[in-house]
Length: 165
Image (cartoon, rainbow, N blue to C red; front, side):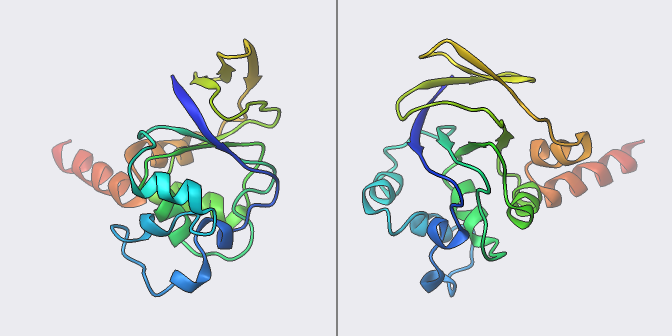
């Protein structure tokens, strides 16, 4: 079970997640400090490590729209956040898969900040309200990449499996 640490609206762009003025910083070890830099209170909590790994971020429709900047995903992964949203922008979704960011597509999600959330294989349970919401699962191949920690980790795992077989 994890707590909702922030709830955002529809059409949150990659520029909100990782402002363009920080594009010179591309290392995954450095990008997390700039996550939601313009939401100063939330950014301060992230940088101070006041938000536990595995915490839940609730997004709206079209989460991650805008540019194709991979740093937006890298910044979120660096804080080990789980993103639940009704839908994700296409390129952002692929970047999440490639980098292994834990995302959940849940079209009817209803949750507020501080709600306790449980994610099962088929639904999101808002423990605080007692409501249950169906997950729209990703294709198994895409989920396997996320579960492995991203495309590089998935490829390494597959290559090792072939070597030992």
